[in-house]
Image (cartoon, one colour):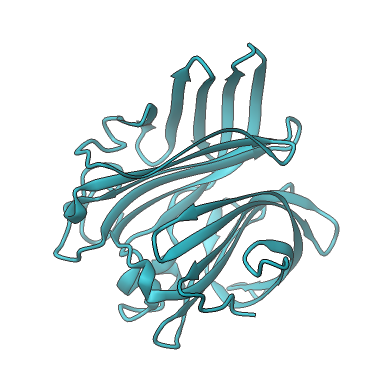
Length: 306
């Protein structure tokens, strides 16, 4: 729990930052079903609005997409359950279990995220200090955790897709000033051997680097001492063609991995866009994994950090 003693799944009151944000994010991928999703509700109290990502895919193509970026504000939060544009998120056990449900004629979802590794604040573990770009302008508190994801997806023709996969979820409160970031890139793999990685490299408009990074192994999260991040981009310079990263943890162990995209989607924020990818990752020893690969870009075009 953060030093403020606020419940990150409950209501966290805004300060005077115009872009104060509280958000709840979920993703997963089930390789047996070749199916995954990106789900997020963001709440901007000082702008009196909210936004929603709800994107599901299979075999690299969309199954259902709902994207609403300027919805009315809601005072509800994950702790008591919240519904936005038909999507319901609800905490089942504080910081350990939560559900995502949706029930319309064309698409139905009933999924549960159950903790594997505990939710831990990667900003704090990165020890960048109060002047770190993420801590100052993107989020004061940003715990992430890995989860077993299970349940059912039902398509409009009645086909049922049973889900038994893995994914991340995160919580956030604090400013979300996208305009402060020129570019960032992210790798969140969950490998079949239990290793999990949070690695985010931000490039600020002030010319500094910012980090959110930690390693999950042996049932806990530990710090990271070095990240070497290399992405090859498609011709659009925004979507990932391939990844080759090296992450060194606080124990001195080097984790080298590559990645190739399985699905891509864009989420716009006026003068900023997030390119979301589900990635198949491979460690140097051949161990497979799956998880998020993400990049963000400031407009007018300010580059991709290459």
